[in-house]
Length: 111
Image (tube, rainbow, N blue to C red):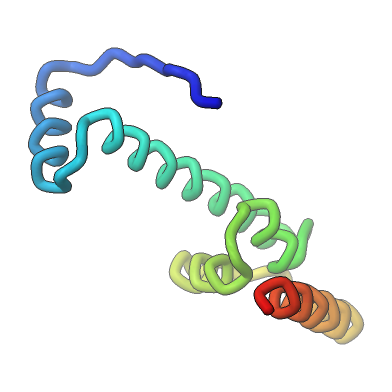
């Protein structure tokens, strides 16, 4: 089920939106939806990456929170130069074990 959401924009913003809409060959509503979904994904990834940086969650958990693949999350934290706090050997082993489990689940799900 979809709901209608309305917003107010300045005239210049409407003109720019119309221009982009023509370039993308999308109607204005679809373009706004596309932009909104991209920004929502970015917002989730940023928040999840911050939790990862603080050591509150693993990289796999951050990916789950952000609703993206582990590979997308890895790419994001690399691109943004986000590093988790230093881990102990035990924590690294647990992280690796957890990542392997998630990988196996994904592989089994796709076969």
